[in-house]
Image (tube, rainbow, N blue to C red; front, side):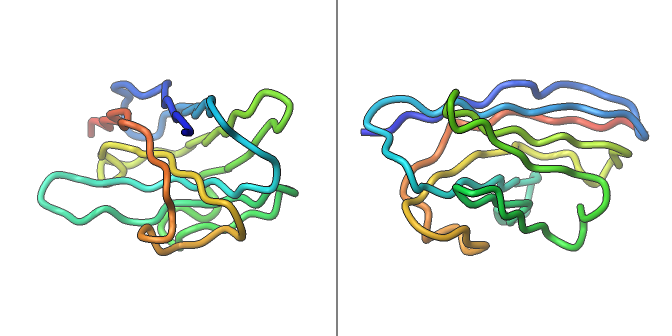
Length: 122
């Protein structure tokens, strides 16, 4: 089984920055892709960014140029650097893992963290 734990969320003013982390543990093997998704109150969970085992990155248009996804395979950890935050970025952020290519469709991810709250005040 694989466990994912997110950290780094919090309250920040608009224009500020945060860095989220997602640590994977348990029966992890190489070759997995990871992704970040978010869910705002009253909204469905949506894709934010994804990264392949080799570091290929993919972003939602809404965060492109502001967010940077990265990973450290030696530490089984993924990061999301969020700059120029906006109130509409407020959501619970979830990390996810799948064996294979990065995907924007959340149903293709088999493992999920519990989420970390990000609140951006105006």
